[in-house]
Amino acid sequence: MKRMLDYGLDLSGVERDLALPDLVAEGDELDALVSAQSDWSMPTPAAGWTIAHQIAHLAAADANVLIALRTPEAFDVVLKQAEAAGSRHADLDAAAGAAKPRSVLLEQWRTGRSEVAAALRDVPLNHGFPWFGSQLTARLMLPLRLMETWAHGQDIFDTLGVPRRPTGRLQHVAALGVAGRELSFYAAQLPTPAEPFRVELTGPDGQTWAWGPEDALQRVQGSALDFCLRVTQRRSRAETDLTAVGEDAQKWLDIARVFL
Image 1 (tube, rainbow, N blue to C red):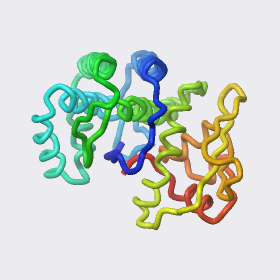
Image 2: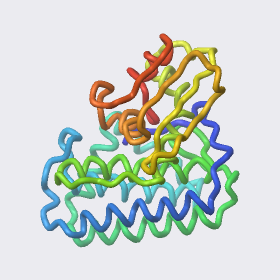
Image 3: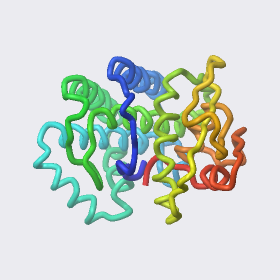
Image 4: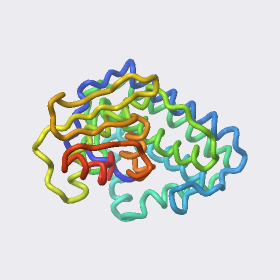
């Protein structure tokens, strides 16, 4: 996953009692999948990344979260390393982790995500700490870690050809996708639409998740799963059931993202 910037993201409704257990559950589900696989050298949809690279990336991100939370003054070193590596930063971190023995990497990831969950449980939700390109809060980091775990997990599920049952945890990812609309236009170097949007998604159990005014002319509809796959760029728009009404809504689905 590339860098994620706090660009106009409004997630004031995030509740720790819901988001934290979901973050833990997301990690546990992926753990059950990869720990049963002896071969982590299989290539995933991310060019040049094996299963080991995917897990190493998650482990490296968790390590960075812990530095930012525990010793924020030391995060400058992380930022300087990332700046020096440029666009290859994530690839280099993933490659370094993937070179470790599978058992070592698995234990590192397990320990790191457990410590991140504990740290995000104890810090005030509005406590600010440094991150790539911006200050973040625990309120935002909770769904971001869940989203990243889910998205990289999707790459591994796809690699192994294992069916993945969508869960209510997708609501966190979908909320990030909705909140990231401005980020999508910013990343595409397009002006942010001033007109309000309505997003209506069908959750895994048939319930409707909705954001925005009911009378908005710009509208996006479809399954929550497909929306999450689209905003995390795990599927092209053509591979989803998503529909859009309005020129700006159409453009959004073409450029949708939750990270830079």
